[in-house]
Length: 175
Image (tube, rainbow, N blue to C red):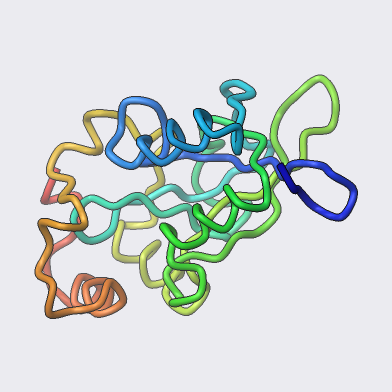
C-alpha cells in the first residue's frame, strides 16, 4: 500500500454518516477490508465546533472554532488511496466539504483532518440552525436522512444546500 511520501497514513476524524451504524460507513468498511483504513477509536474534538444538519439531514461540521460543542466522532488512519475515495464521497473538488486540520482530545497530541462544510456556506448553515450545534450525530439526528441516490437527481448537492438555506423553514422543524 502506498501512503504519503513518508509511508504514513493520514488520520481522519469522522463525525457523521461515515461512522459505524450510518449509511456511508460502507465506504469505511470497504477501505478497512482492502487495508486502506484502520479504525483507531472514538475521539472528541479539542475545541468546540458547530455540528449541524443541512438538507436531507446531512451532517456538517462548521469551521467556526469556539462555537457549538466539542464533537464526538471516530478516528481512522487512512492510506492515500482511501483518502482519495473519502474526498470523492465528500465532494471536496465540488465545493461540498473541505478537508482541514482538527485537534482531538487525547493523552498525546492527536492531530487529524476532518471534512468541514465549505466556507462559502458554513456561516449560513450555522444561522439556519439557530446557532445551535450538536455534540454528536446520532440516530435521533439522522432520522429523516435521505440517501444520495434517493434525492432529486436533477440538482447538484450545492443546489440542494442553497435551496435549504433559502427556505423559510428551519432545520430543527424536520427532526
